[in-house]
Image 1 (cartoon, rainbow over the protein chains, first blue to last red):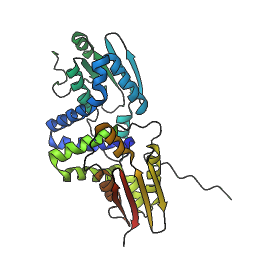
Image 2 (cartoon, rainbow over the protein chains, first blue to last red):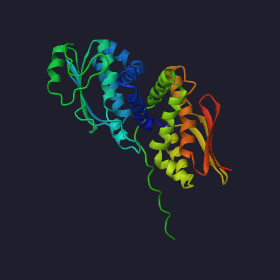
Image 3 (tube, rainbow over the protein chains, first blue to last red):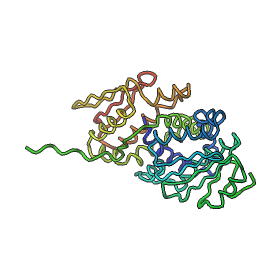
Image 4 (tube, one colour):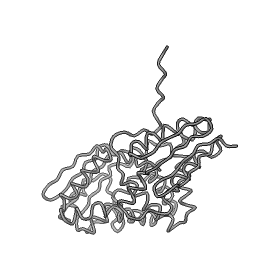
Length: 166
Length: 154
């Protein structure tokens, strides 16, 4: 058994292999993980909207030992990750971290938000610092406005960063 | 007489809560990799886990030290509430897993467990021990159950 604690280091090895196969292969994998994640989050979003997302990430915060703040507003959910255990473990690793490790997060979350009609703004800030800011909006115009202040805006399959026009 | 010194922490010694759903993502990944690239690629990735990610465990095994592997097993199988025991003998160490938390969690949340799910154990074990005085073998004894044995090579 690879302990669940070490999943992110396994993930890192998978990313490194897929990177050698090309961008399309990485994106297909993120979509596969996104489909896998649907069984944990899709019903919550479809039945409870932003409050369902808040519920999902509250569990993640606890189970994954994240240093994160969640703020639920009428029009959006904000997630401020200031100690990401996933990237921290990928970097605290005797194997080399994949340089774009952070990209997987928007890679699986973005397609779910597209599918459910929400608008994701994912600011990774830096790929070498275990922190990021994720905002999910009901209104696409507010999402576009929020993108302007992002330091490292992430894209996802079907939506390249900086593409706009959602 | 001085107290025996505590061994240093494991190279990876996570504490706090556990997120068992990661095992579901491993299962999905196994099916994805085998389906698109074949079993050899999956095994190459697991071998890199054994040689690169677990380089420190491998260093101990290469140096003839079996104890670090036992500490690793105890720490993580206990954290995930496995039903297991470890029998440390002079000739071999036997880890008996009666209820694997990874296999059973995937079975619970996904229904079907990949036929290659337990390769993560057998291939990573082989890679950690490759070229060392020991072999680490894995016998699947039932659904979500196995026996892992560290034995000095003949």
